[in-house]
Length: 187
Image (cartoon, rainbow, N blue to C red):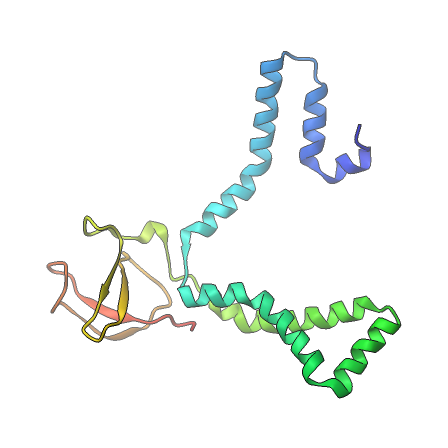
C-alpha cells in the first residue's frame, strides 16, 4: 500500500487507489478507472493538440529546440575558454559544495538565451488556416531554374510574414490567384 503522502502528491494515483477500493463489479470498476484516467490526462492532451495547431518557421523551430543544448554548451564554453577566472570560480563552487551557485549561473545563461530566442516563437499560421487547392494537398515542393528546392504552403491567412514584392497573378498555378514570396519575420 502506498503512503498517503505519495498519494496526495499524485492525484492520478490517489483517484486510482480510491476507485480500486470501491466495492463494485469488475467491468464497472474498470470503466470507472478508465474514465478517471481519461479525465486526468485530458487537459494535457488538449494543450498538446493546441500546440500542434500552431505552425512556425522551420528555422525558428530548430533554433528553439537547440536553445537548451546551446545554453549548456555556452556555459561550458565560458568555463573552458576563460581559464583564469571562470575555472577558478568553478573550482571554488566545487570546493565549497555550492552546487546551487553553479546552477544559478547556468540558469542565468539559459535565461539570457531564452530571452534571445523568445522572438523565434512567432506563430505564422494555424493548421485550420491551410488551404487545399490541388489534389497534391496543402504542401508542395518544386525545383526552380537555379536548382533550389522550394516548399509551397497555401494558407487562407498568415501572420508575421513580410511580403517580398507585390502579389502578381502571372505564373500563378491557380487561376485568379496572385502569389508572392514571403520570409519569416523572426529569423
